[in-house]
Length: 212
Image 1 (tube, rainbow, N blue to C red):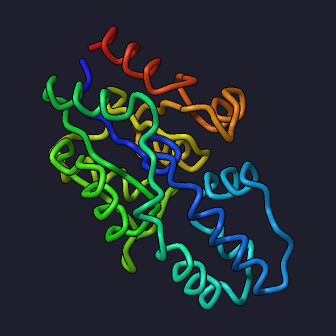
Image 2 (image 1 turned 90 degrees about the vertical axis):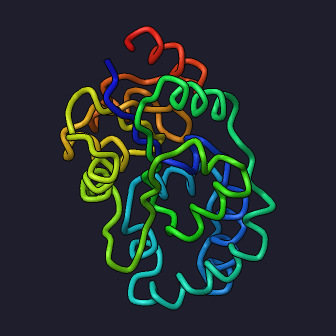
Image 3 (image 1 turned 135 degrees about the vertical axis):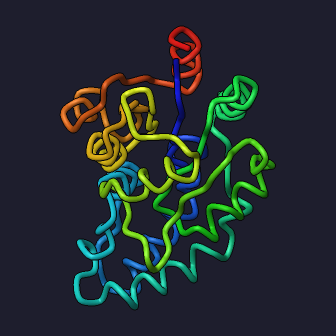
């Protein structure tokens, strides 16, 4: 049986990278730094919580503010659900499987995206970044999500994500890690803790149906 499913958001359920890529590259330009490809930005964000520190060093705080100013100009208009995302969420709800979002996006932005997509009613909890919360790969946000769902971290709790930080966070929290391959290969995700890897959300849904 599946006792619960935790889901990353960007790159896992939605393609929210276009505004991220545009905003980050414009910020690079304003700070005199080289541009990054879309693929490299996906990989960078997938590694976890200190990406802006690694990119901007001592200028992290002001660069982050500028990045968010640019990002927020149009991010709600440029969100595309990934194929199979809504079907997966509907199945989880119909099966009464506790389900929560665990994202490195801010709490406010995550909730806004879910409202625009019309998915808020399909989830029992949303754990995004706040000033008080650390991000993945720290297990704290996953443990908070489990607490909000009234479930205990275990191998029957699955964390689905597309990044290295998702896999590491799952293992540190004591959950099973499901990797969705895009910016990172199955081999890369397995090396950092993925128990199973998939090429699409449809594959994920089929596999979950088999084991439930």
